[in-house]
Length: 326
Image 1: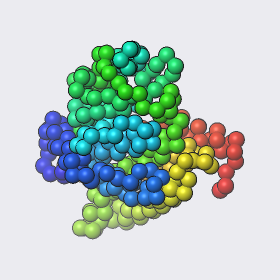
Image 2: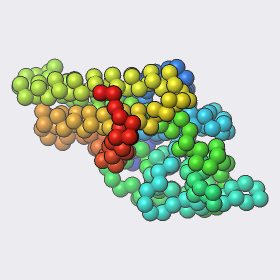
Image 3: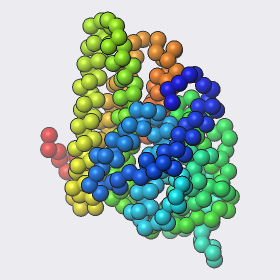
Image 4: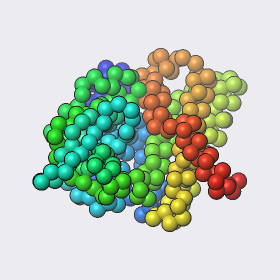
């Protein structure tokens, strides 16, 4: 996909075609988290992110939805269906669900819905009289709000607000089941694999430059630091994947701590890689290499799924209470 410069609409259309192809080819039938091959699952997501972060965001959402449906005994996805997970609950408009004689009806607005116009189905969280629940919905009756993602970063991920006007939804799992299941933290940790893949893609610009010409000692120092950082992130991902496979039901109650640590580490690595590549190469690639500039913009936005100091504070509270084995 790293071809000529394209306008936003054309690039989004190409990413959507790529997503459809990934689903229909069966390449997104990845091992489920904790099933013994979590490394392979995360390697596939990292490879997609190295290729294109918006594509990876759509594919990661689909594979996460498939894992959630399996874990919570939800409806089996139909062949060729494309799923998203729309579970963000930021300040502002919200989504609610009410029981009726024929099932459940959802009304309101859901924000940050990646794949709003390309997904055929979605898992969405909504407020009910008893608390938050997860619902499976068909996208055909939903109304994406055009223009609700004007930003450049992750523009091709088709992340829009979506309106629900008395839409039917099928409950998946019990009240609060989405966040209380072991896979919640396993899926969160898996997002770090996408950040890692995106960081590798950014780093390739520096690696290629150093292989083609004399870049000077300062750029080589940045390349050395990038090498250490990416290898550290890779090792952490592999260790976390193995731990998940060793305790898939999270009987040791380590899932949240593991996810917080892994995401904090990989976010810091990806941020450092972007900074070092920029300092080593200057404005040239950002201004003249469309693929690189897009990748940096996308990764900058994608990393903000990490909640920065809020997540670090949550980790710190756990460490203060339980201690740490450093």
